[in-house]
Image (cartoon, rainbow, N blue to C red; front, side):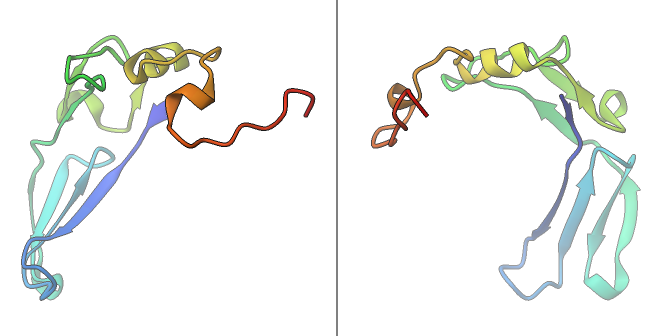
Length: 106
């Protein structure tokens, strides 16, 4: 599994006069008003945490510096499931209250 993501955040609550953009595809991040954005080196950090807040490993580590993640973060399905605290055999009805489960013959 490979994670490749980006973000855009308007830190002015809707006026769009200070927008932040970045991600792990590029080593640069942008900020400013939409018509006059400036670029700077990105210092984005990706941290994989379990539901209880403890660190979990994806792609061999829990903390990814931007320089190590440019182009994507690759790990295994088993690592991702372990971070989520589930397995492929987990009962979906026990994962989320109120989950409707299809009959087993389907």
